[in-house]
Length: 386
Image (cartoon, rainbow, N blue to C red; front, top):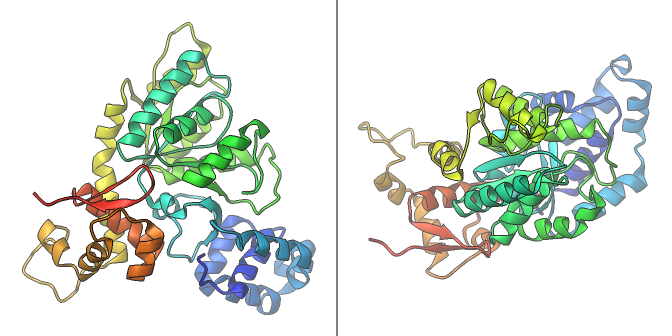
């Protein structure tokens, strides 16, 4: 939700997200049926038979904790704090497709990154020195190739993946098993601050939610669901990383695994994934080559969703061609707004009036077409023609 979202809409979302007995699936259904959190809340309070709701749920909906909701609203009022609800056009497209998707996301940082092509990197919390080095090498290469590295900010492989992307001057996304205002493990306080400044911290849990064992498998489905593919670097046979890989496979996403020594227990999970059909991966270039076509397809699909074809166009021309894209008034408007200096998304939004999702999609298309490039500072610049 952006700054233009009404306080009543934000409050309705917060009440529903904190309501006991209403899970993500039920909440998505309510939003789909009623069109907004406000109307869904009105329905639950007045139009739904009391016996359809548990006593605790009914009591909360009728009289939610005002102090708690006010604290949540204060949190949302801080710079770079966002709530993306299911009906929000900025809710990430790839995540919307997965079974069991979250109904909403709390985000600290750059929410537009959730629309960018991502590669999830996961692995053991007790990683070997070689595993950490391999993670850093792959993360740096993937980030510099234009993929956003996404992980869970855990010890070991996760933390190394985030740090390497940031050290390369690139953004990274961390999906949390706590509320967006808490850091687990605590040793990653400084890392979390760097990610919030240069990337995005993401959680489906409201502020103040402590980490619980059952939260982390739920977090893993979001890690894989945001990404085009998941890379497992090191993992034992009981590693939670295998849960993330399983989610990725069930979501129809690519799974990559790096093999290791037969004498290394932390390689056995990767070997099992390879036996189960994951791609044996030795270089970052293999992942880049495999996912680049999907990244381009994602950009074109997002463009098609946000800027549908003109139904009056005819003659069999493909409007995703360079010529058609140049003639698209929205793209002409965006390029004119960019000028020839580096510019950030916030300024582009002010100049064009486009939302985060639209800008992110259009800039990705233009970047893949070689017309603009992103910088390490998170800005964009036009490239000279020819």
